[in-house]
Image (cartoon, rainbow, N blue to C red):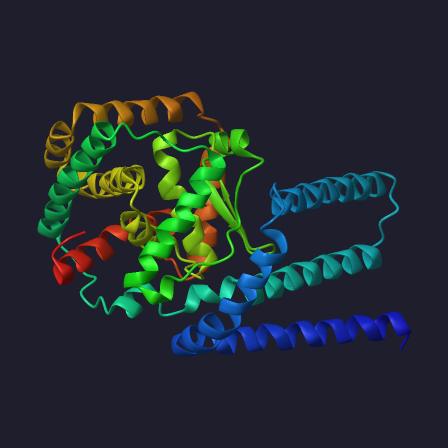
Length: 361
């Protein structure tokens, strides 16, 4: 056996061993919660934020750009080889196996750095929210509560003449919101800010993303080109991912807990605005009249913001977005979120359970 073949065999053995360990650990949610999330990830994610958080731009975005350029270059090079008939069966098999090994390596790193969190017990377990099932009456109830909440929050913003913060101030205020939330929920302790403006905000408007977390650098990215009233809640949502809440409904809920703990009314409004839209869409599926009536009860200035959001989305429609949304939905389903893109809306069920337990949201 040649030295190269020996190394390849060892690489496959090591990779398979890592995959098996990841699967075994992920199978036990208590292990994930107590061993991986609370101990390893809690420490490791802080280290990533300390190392990369001080850099003024998103290093993760630059990493994605380099990887994208490399993939394009490899695709062109291999296509040329194919047309020149320099690709033999043996070489093709070798390239496929090498590519497969690269994907397995990425899978391993992704899971070690963050992905195992998809299998943790999560925020419902930490808050002991047991009644996560709900019916149509519960949905209408939470919709009515959110109408009042979003109206009150909008009035607070207007009466206080609050201004939407700039990028740096926005990210700092998002961190402060977690500092306040920590007093009531110690497990939401967040240190070492690493939230940055996405370098691909303009592109994101056409692809349909408002923020994302880079598990390889520990940075949270916010699309700061979307309407200002959306950005505070996006920021707290992405920080929730940094704290190990991988599932979208959990990140939405943790982002809500942090944002309403903030002393800034702008964060309250941004959060209740988004949550109302989630609940309103859920109600629309079974009672469109009730959904429309709820919108009619909104403050005129809230309605104006909804119209601005609608116009913004219309102006950034693209033929690519449905495909990106479909692919991301498949990714979510592969990572313990069977509802796919509807996982975001699942925060409504957690809100209902929280309201039933505490009497307020």
